[in-house]
Length: 148
Ligand SMILES: [Zn+2]
Image (cartoon, rainbow, N blue to C red; front, side, top):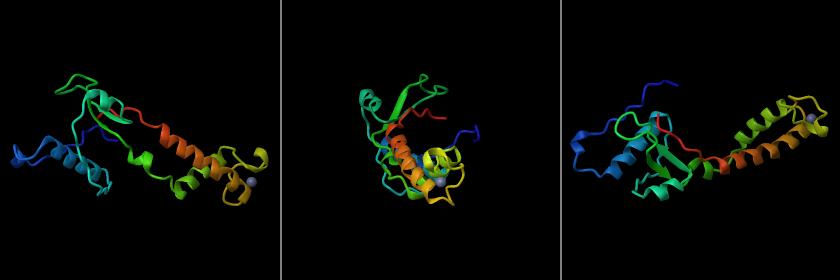
């Protein structure tokens, strides 16, 4: 990944005409699109106290290179789209195949690894494991994401 910052430009003609919340929401839309995420769900940016934001599963802290002290809590999201999105069958299959290659096989691990596509029993062993692991990862994730 490039170390260049993602630069988002806002229309300076709107200075004094647009609230910080609306401007932040549009900047968030721009950032998502910059990373190829076409996400047309509305984004609403609201003000809250530090304590409330600290309790959120996704938080953003400033690195302190420009305007703020390092680690200043700037924003949070109450609910992760990733965490609330159901795990897809394609994700389960990819993870199950990886588990199988790592030795999760049928017959209590007696089958050779890598037979996911040819052995239905290996698939039966790995698919539920992969689904449980992916769902567990979704619900336990939530570390701070410093801005870069
Ligand atoms: Zn097998």
